[in-house]
Image (cartoon, rainbow, N blue to C red; front, side, top):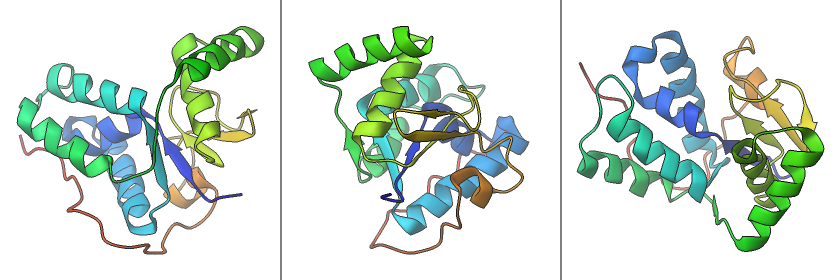
Length: 167
């Protein structure tokens, strides 16, 4: 067990998007704790989806330069690169586990990153796939339950925590 927590795009978006109300607060706390602990991990898929979502799909889209600044901060986390074998593995997993290809790709990247937990609202809470436990932080009662343990150990410097845009 590495203690690594792989974060899906929706969690990063909710942490930034104040219009998400309760989900914003939960995601903001979770992401903040991951900055402090150094336990967060992502993939290139998550980074790409994040950029598109925050510049085009949220109620108050970010200017591209601001979104890039957010990306620059997140690339300090471990980032799992998507390679040809990752895509092949995800296609097999999607078929075997009856997942969408994109969800399977997320799970494969989480497993390859060494994550114990994948936080997302898009997969079944409590399910274990490829050795990774799926946790929905919006279903769990507290952020520490969402990741399976308290998250509070600082592991080095981090940039200013993304705060979200004021309306």
